[in-house]
Length: 263
Image (cartoon, rainbow, N blue to C red):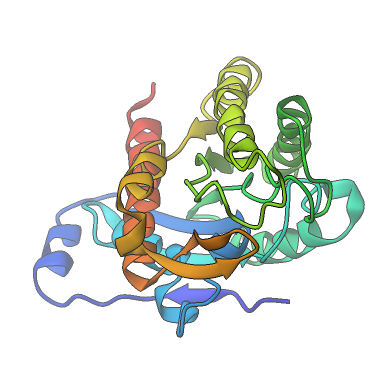
């Protein structure tokens, strides 16, 4: 079981004084759900540099944010199938983390979700390949359980990020996995639209920009790794994790602003 990481970033000058201007600062507790990218594998110090750490740091530095606590529930190699509530496995660990953070009743509990990389694989990870329709159904089961267990929580769905087409693939058609990954994007949009009707202001679209950014800049921001089809790019390095954290943090902050401005 992963230890919940508490992030207390004390900036005693500009940030402290700017936060103090607000009568009602945001207090935020975030549970990050994901795979090896969220976990921060390969990195030397993921506890300091994994995307959830950097996203939480970014979030803390924004106006009107008082405190950020978070738990990194990224687990290498996992799919939406692995996080299904009825399996009693990784969702249970998410629940343990969320139960602890939800005790802070004054804070907004957010689930930041980025799943799909392993679902899109041609073979290997549990349940892969996951069709777009099943991806939608799996995510819906996960989200439904979160909304039921934590009636005041928000769920933010980020698009999975780009990976090189030759990543761990053993197919003559190396683009297959990446094509399937992108087929999940409309499913995420459909989920957000569906919950806008059934659970207004509870489920939000998260980051949509990181995919294209890393596609264009992967050699600078990803580790080069050796695979069955040569060098591939899948996992962000320290600089890449910082960039991904910024994308996530911005999306989370935008949701807080949108929620606070709603009638």
